[in-house]
Image (cartoon, rainbow, N blue to C red):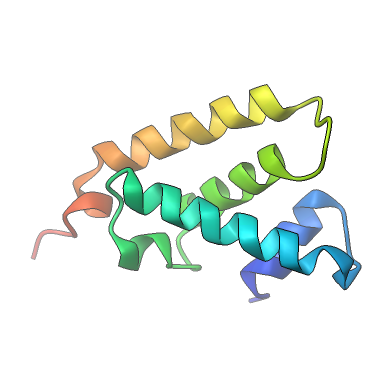
Length: 97
């Protein structure tokens, strides 16, 4: 499986390394936002979890670049994903044994 930064860059439709620092920073910010909202750190850093990677990707797409015409729509989608994650015990208190 490709690294998360590569998958996010693909979703942004960029391939050059020129934006790697900005994309990496947005990925880190998305993870931190999830943790601050109540998602377990171990879950927020799980690159194999489809919901986590989708949330990080949508957050990054919402905040990447200037004058993004889709910012509001993508931000709303991210907030909805984040709300679902924070309401799930699997993401906030861990799975039941």
